[in-house]
Length: 216
Image 1 (cartoon, rainbow, N blue to C red):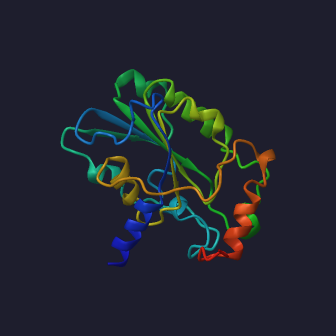
Image 2 (cartoon, one colour):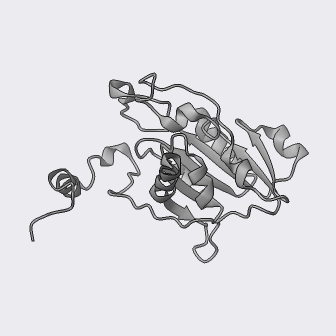
């Protein structure tokens, strides 16, 4: 029961920030019964990354879990997983679409101090490499917004999945259309670090009135 509730929380916390380069032609939900799907990125199938910090090891670690995408796919959908696709990946197979799942290393306390809030260079290069060859959904695993603006034109869709923990299957539930997106951002997603702090008044209101009980 508690895991079902956690999976529901994951589904409802996902934020859809882009869906199709053409607004009249949404990219999501993905079909789960046709074609060949490439799934890439080291955060796809890793419980440690999806939990983040403050786990039993405090600062977090990596660790494999069963791929939830495989669990929901249809009989006619082939799923190929490669953490870091190469040229040979596309020379031997033709893909209908791709999902790239990236994010931060687990952290807690000052271990998360970061003045750039950027993805690593090799991660950006991998995303651009995949996007240039197949329509791609980018999923970000993180405890905070990161700089993704340069990548938004390249990807077909972008989803902020935060830290889904053990119930990453909730992400698959939504991107394949079994459930709708519900999550919204409490504040504007930054384009550049020099824009911080953003929505200061909104932040103050959240801190002062955590239950939304402001003065009338």
